[in-house]
Amino acid sequence: MAGNWKMYKNVSETRAYFQNFLPQVKDAKDREIVICPPFPNLETAVRETNDSIVKIGAQNLYWGKEGAVTGEVSGPMLHNIGCTYVIIAHSERREYFCEADEDVLKKTRAALEYELTPIVCVGERLGERETGQTETILVDQFRGGLSGLEPAEFAKIVVAYEPVWAIGTGKTATPEIAEEAHSIIRRQARDRFGDHAANKLRILYGGSVKPENVKALMFKEEIDGVLVGGASLNPDSFAAIVNF
Ligand code: PEP
Image 1 (cartoon, rainbow, N blue to C red):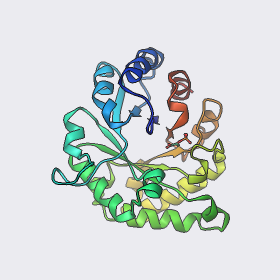
Image 2: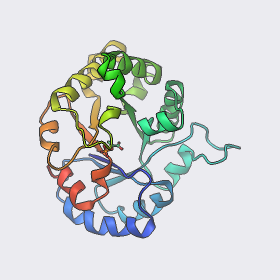
Image 3: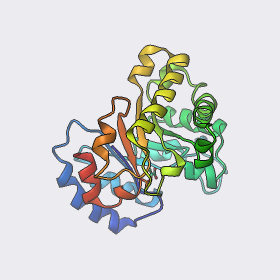
Image 4: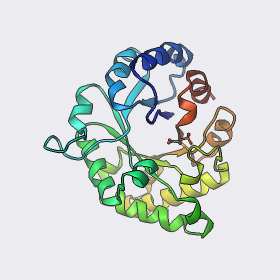
């Protein structure tokens, strides 16, 4: 159950969030909980969650280790402060920062090299769904961003299906739509990496997940978890999602 705070919250809001959130999820030991705050809050978030089951992830990374790359943050830097996850290729990064599938592959590899679990996002835009291109888009994103991984690398990643039309819009994909898309992704995983890898792959659904709709989504066998934006900003609503 992963939360993406996007560009929200400062350090003191981060502290207050965890003071409220942690007691609410302390018994959720059968869940893996990850929260991805903005870069300046990561160290605080790691410190606040140190003795808890909650893990902390970044929202992006650069593929190099260090160098003259102004404004970027590398895998070893994130690893060094205690991050264990990183979101890669969120649709906002693809859309506003022109991240291409070849960048996705480089970032995913870099994350793995520095012991960060990548949560790699894929998903179609509204126009692409309406013109029947969903499968083509998902297949292209999988082939361009993930097929180049070694099997041992692929075994360590998490994929998030996030239809762009459902992100921040209040329009959740129905459990059936999400399930169908997850099957397409899993089929790609099976074709490239085999049955075992495909069965083990965790695929999260993301797009307007809320306490009211999480149960129906999680009830689907193909859906292994959720990636939550807006509703993860409130500790009560994210706790309700985690404890669905
Ligand atoms: C997201 O940012 O990954 C997301 C799914 O956002 P929201 O839950 O607000 O749609």
